[in-house]
Length: 122
Image 1 (cartoon, rainbow, N blue to C red):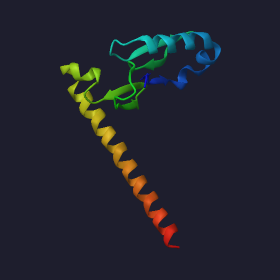
Image 2 (image 1 turned 90 degrees about the horizontal axis):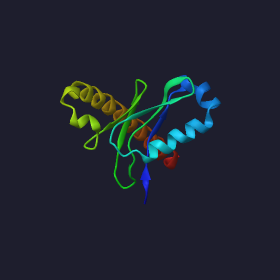
Image 3 (image 1 turned 120 degrees about the vertical axis):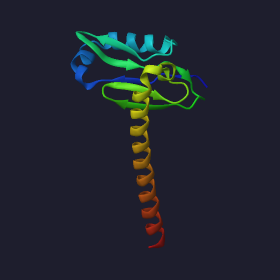
Image 4 (image 1 turned 90 degrees about the vertical axis):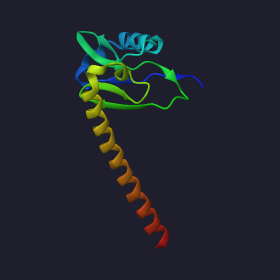
């Protein structure tokens, strides 16, 4: 297997992204080549940061990301945030949000299973 690079596009920069496809492509290639471990922000046209990316990582490495507040944050042991003691409260807040999302997904799966069981019994 190869590597994967999570990329986030902000809709605020839609017109700049649409008008500058070659610059977007170049930024994607830069992101795929950038193994420095930090979220990188890329300007496109006259918009300062309509796209950002996390470092590439091998496809066999599980990763959990949170897209929130115009940013893409990686949670877990590999996170750049793990090296910054001044970001403990941010990490706690991100973890709380992630737990809420996981609980929502668990409820959705349970509802789907119940509906499937009802359909099977009908």
